[in-house]
Image 1 (tube, rainbow, N blue to C red):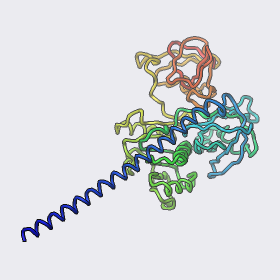
Image 2 (image 1 turned 90 degrees about the vertical axis):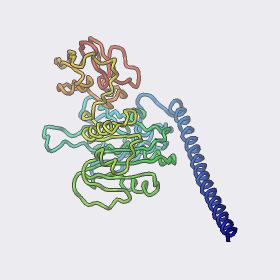
Image 3 (image 1 turned 180 degrees about the vertical axis):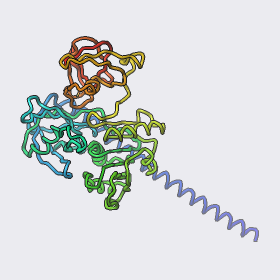
Image 4 (image 1 turned 45 degrees about the vertical axis):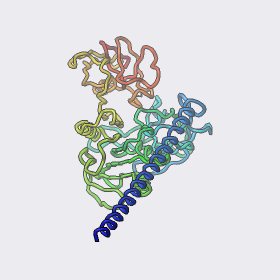
Length: 418
Ligand code: FES
């Protein structure tokens, strides 16, 4: 009896050991496959980066303006259209980093000077056949009767047709997704701010990325969504893509599954309640108020500045607050007189005034602008007297004696030709 017990016990131990060994082997195999997949993805990414560098720097890249033909136009909803653009010279297109934008020079009938505007690219940065921008028609709010409709967006919607030719600068912008990162990705979009996110999602899809992605997409009502069917297909195809809608006006829910649908505005609390990881890269694009609350909420949660990326549309965007300390006055309360000679106005600039462009706009002084990020050169203004500093580096050399007011602040008493 005693020996029988020993034998049974031994058999159980042996079985347990075999089972344990199998489990360990299975986990090892899984890890091995995961490592191989990671290595494969890295190789793909590295190849694309190398190709990107090559193509951007050589045959397909261009500087200055290039003619593009509108190949087709798609209506996304009553106020938003997508424009598919192909180069008029018939040559290929360079890839771009998802999140970047195109700058357009529009010759609008009845307006003496060309209007320069920037629109985010909304499709994969890996597509070589066409570029796509998705444009919302900017109508003046009923509550502000003196405001006018957006000149360029109305031109895109009401005047442009398939076959029309446009002047376009190469993709640029600092709000882009680093495809070499492996961290989870949290994309927060308000309204048409979803366009750069679509480019990011489509690029990740095209590259077969296994990165975990959350998209929080807020609009007023269901009718304002764009490409919801495409997003639905993405979330069916990838179980690492988590889609959550927010509707600020009440309406019918439950028609865009998978993914959750929520009432109200997107908030920092709500995204974490819905499972967004805190150890992620956050990309935010939308109206100023939404971005303001998201960015400060993320800071309060301890998310580092380096992990928070944002882009605003138009002058209502939040101030970056990342001015290089060496270009700001030593004392915060210091004020500097800035004279706009053509407008015959002098203001007292302080660090709260923001950039020279923002300070001019607040004083009712018109300075043409496009990208508002130091890329397109539209806000270039002659400096008659004084010294300026830049809060960010301009994307290209600025001609001597002038400044890009969208990223400049005064360093001394200043006189500008504006
Ligand atoms: S507005 Fe484009 S560089 Fe200033």
